[in-house]
Structure formats: C-alpha cells, structure tokens
Image (tube, rainbow, N blue to C red; front, side, top):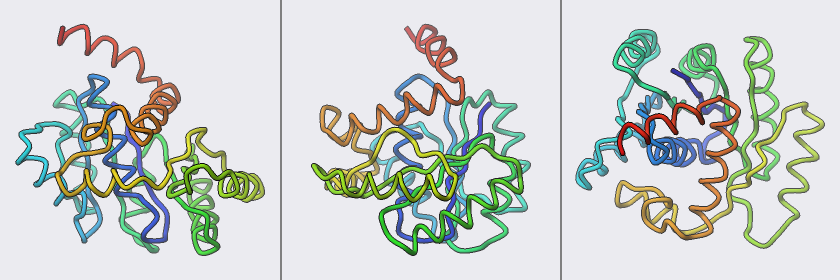
Amino acid sequence: MRTIALSINKGGVGKTTTTKNIACAAVEAGLNVLVLDMDTQQNSTNWGRRREKQEKSLPLVKFSTEQDLPEELKRAAKAGCDLVVIDTPPGRSSEAMAAVEAADLVLVPFWNDQDCYDGVTKTTALTRRLGKEAYGVLNFATPNSKSHEETARDVLKAIGLPIAPTVIHRYDVHRLANVEGLTALELEPHSHAAQEITALWQWLSAVLQLGNRAQMQKGIKA
C-alpha cells in the first residue's frame, strides 16, 4: 500500500480537487483507493456523499482525525487497499504534520501567487525535516499561457522542490464535475482537463511504482 499526502499551509490552492482527481485516476487504473479527509470543512467527504448518488463505490471516502489516522491506515492495509490519498487542512496544523509523517510521498499543490510560494517554502521545510519525498503541483494555470509555468518552475527551483511534469490548468469542467460528485476524467473523459489528470497519474504511479499493480488488477477484473 502506498500513501500520498496533499499538503500546503494555504487554502484555495486545489488540494481537494487534486486529491479527488488522483484518487479517481487510480481507480480507473484498477486500484483499490481510499481518500482520507482530514480537513474539518470536509469538502472531500461531501463530494464522496454526492458520489454515492452516482452509484460510484470507489474511491471510498472517509473523514479522519489525527488521532484516528494510524488505525485508519492499518485497516486500509489489512483490507487490501493499494493507495491512500490524504486531503489535509490549510494552515499550520498537527493534522497536516501527521499526514505528511505517515505518507510515502507528499504533493504540494500551489498556484502562481506569492502567498502560495510562501506556503510552498514552509511545507517543503516540513517534508525535509521529516525526510519525505515531495513534489510541487502547479494548479489553476491559465490555458495557452506559459508565463505561469515558467515562473513556477523558476521559483520552485530556487526553493529546492521538484515540480511535477504535468500542469493542471483552470478548466470549468473541474467545477461542474464536483457538483455531480465526479471528476473531469469521468464527466468529460476526452477533455483537455481529463488528459492532464491522466498524465499526472501516469507520472505519479511511476514514482510510486504502482504501474505493475494496476496492470495486475485490471487483469483480475477482466
């Protein structure tokens, strides 16, 4: 079982959207996936409830406290879960630290804004203290514009945080899919937004060495 934490001490940067997209891309690849929502706003949890109305059984979405996290991860491993994706609250919190500490990999979603870069710096320092592999994920980039990407790569290079090769652009389908308890990959599978999520997952599954497991799972289902 692999565990990913999405963390940055800044709100509104796409942690929950990225969590949902990664989780559903992993399900599409044939993995058993659990989303643990540690944010008291419970946006991932509420999305999961909307998802139930679409008769989507995976990913399983559960709210978890810091105290419950170790037991939730033990139960997930025992149940044969392949991937756990943890959505953390914004700001400096013990929940975010616990999630980062429990993770095999940390993703730091951000967008092109100075406050975000301050948050990236602080979260990067946390991952280093805990000895965790981490990558930045640029969200909300303007389609057909390279300036956001160029700035982000330069800033993260200065911070010393590697950046994921796939940039997630600002497409309205992400908002529309959320209303239905879905993701862009499900609502508009041939859209540019869906293609970006697929590319992000392919890179991420390679980093986590989940590709072989996904192929095996697909073979079992077939």
